[in-house]
Amino acid sequence: MGKAHIYVGEKQVGMIHEEEAAQYLFQMCNSEHLVPSEIKEGKIEAIAEKQGVLTVDQKRLEIVNATGKTMIATKPNFYSLEKGEVAAGMRIIPLVMEENKLKDLKQHIGKRPLLQLHPFTFKKIGIITTGSEVYYKRIKDGFEPVLRKKITPFPAEIIATKIVELCQQKDLKISEQLVLPDDKEQLIKAMKRICDQKNADLILTTGGTGLAPRDCMPEATQAVGQRNVPGISEAMRNFSMQITKRSMLSRGVSVIRHQTLIINLPGSPKAVEESLTYIIDQLPHAIGLIQDRQNEAYKH
Image 1 (cartoon, rainbow, N blue to C red):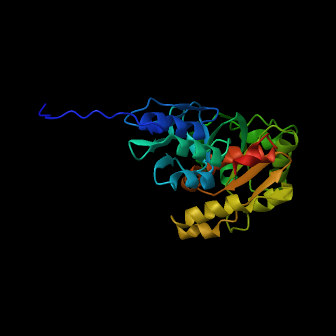
Image 2: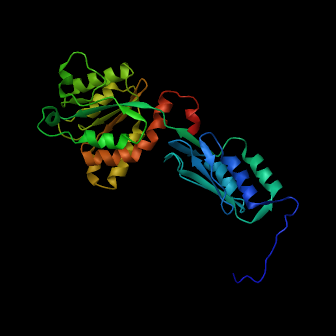
Image 3: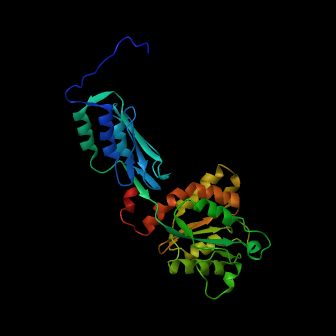
């Protein structure tokens, strides 16, 4: 092989090899639903055992990465991980390191894991499409296929399938998708019914958020809501502004009624897909907070 010499390293007392050190670093990150990979060339990875949202304790992670000898590289905070996807990789930079320094570092950052994976929990989602043109079948509903495409990868059930005549019935069946005209009172009635009967954790509305006189979805949603969540709608508008300045004309709002989150999506299928793609990773955490799920507040 062209090798003239072979060098043999002897382990010194108090020093630890990179493969053993990698296990120390994994222990600092290790939590439920994260499993270790095989160690290769001194590097070990944390692998998602389930689909969920990764949270990273960034302040304590900075302590580890500031030593100059230890390194943990992670996916971004609140990143949506697929089952089997790498959450983080870690190693020491030198070939060997003082074991007592690793022990001191581990003690300094504390027992709480640097990384946590929060599995998605099954949620029920209601969809309300507003627009007299869709309701009276003058145009085809282009929103529902987009919403299904975005929601399908997540463990959620769309409890609504399209039945246009639903608003004409006295007893609305929450297990069906609502396609309603631009009528504020009908929209209020539909949203109240879904929330008050606790049949959906999340309601996504499409259409009716523009400046036309008939657009009344924001007003209907505000009438139903008990608390506002302005950050969601602000984030969608801010993101959409990078694509088109016309997004500033959207008046969509986001609110909470009881334990249900209601979000107004924009008025075109393309904008719906863009906006929902941008926010969807944060929705399981938001719903967990609304429903006061155990330990959800510690995921910030």
